[in-house]
Length: 131
Figure 1 (tube, rainbow, N blue to C red):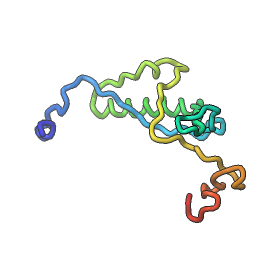
Figure 2 (figure 1 turned 90 degrees about the vertical axis):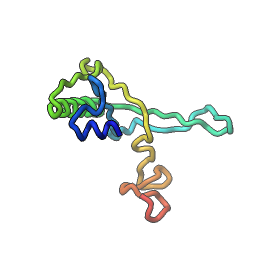
Figure 3 (figure 1 turned 90 degrees about the horizontal axis):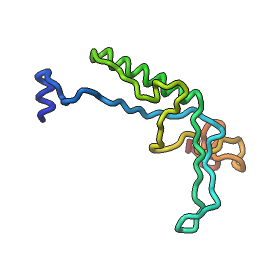
Figure 4 (figure 1 turned 45 degrees about the horizontal axis):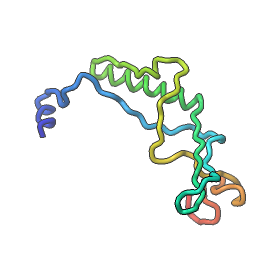
């Protein structure tokens, strides 16, 4: 309620001297990224999954470029300074990423159901109208 009143009177909504921007990105498809079953089993005796998730140069460049564009645009709009995170200042630094809800490309694409889950049109083999 107080934040709304301050906004209506053109006052500061939040008393702070900085705002941190957080981005969520999808990585580009990479045929070397994959999910397989490991030799280790879980408590139920089922094989655990092994996630080999890789970022490539395009992913890093996209994250850096987007951070720069958005940061500078927000700074220009609000007449403030954009201060990039340390990793953005260091050439060749790897973005500090973490997984969120899902990994892109977790099904193998193939024209044959023996070697893939979906066909070239992303339709699941053997199930009509499931894409």
